[in-house]
Length: 348
View 1 (cartoon, rainbow, N blue to C red):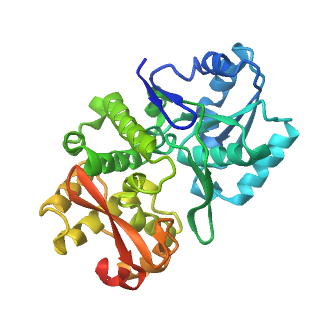
View 2 (view 1 turned 120 degrees about the vertical axis):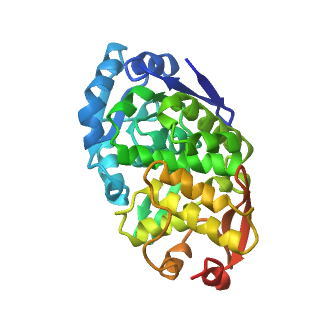
View 3 (view 1 turned 60 degrees about the horizontal axis):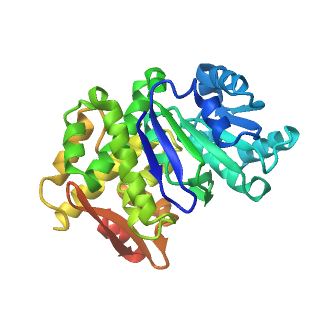
């Protein structure tokens, strides 16, 4: 079973393969033998895998309870957090117990934030069931919720104690959701690994699925180990996200995260090429990679409408906002832009 260890302040393992959902109980029992488990999931994933996980936990002698909230980005808010806190209190979850996130990125972010904040911090396990969550959001300890002011503005850094990526769960993932993960994988190739980018651009991701998952997870592991608190190098992982988050918010989250990031990567790279900051042809390569999976590469609206949303981005520092630009495919850098120049910079 491929295992990647993330050496943060409290190291943890990421296991990648098939059948991990069925063995989750035994693996968690070995890690925390006396803990009670509270499974947090959404109503869609619950119908697919909730019963199997509870059965695995109980077979291993773990007392387990479960809470499911409505599927989708609309549940990633403080109201859902209140519901979870109420459930944890009613279930008697203590500091010696743990939470288990079973689902995609929204479930992982919400559960992680609940773990970080309940009783000032308890352990949690990530069991991601989407491609995007496996390669990105389940690794690195970023947790949080959205507010009316923007995406992921309230949250905490809180590392899991274990991540189980059961690739068999991807068989039930709708193609649209799978493509969200592909966009994030393309991001990894664009900023760090040209060979990975070329593999993805060929359209052959499903033929090399576990290889791609391992490579993306390992790239994120290396980045998180060098910058756990997102103060420098780790910000490169936000390539395409400054515009992407603004596109999500502007659409009322009708545009999914991965597709918004894909558009963000293409738009910012076309602009940085035009300004002579990125190697010619880089944007065209991103466009072709996205097209291989039927994803758009252009924002339908006016980019200037996105500026107010971008001003609330977490990468803003005082009077400047940090964009992530490519030098070329496989290499990226941070590029601060004064707030007063953001409109002209993005060509709005």
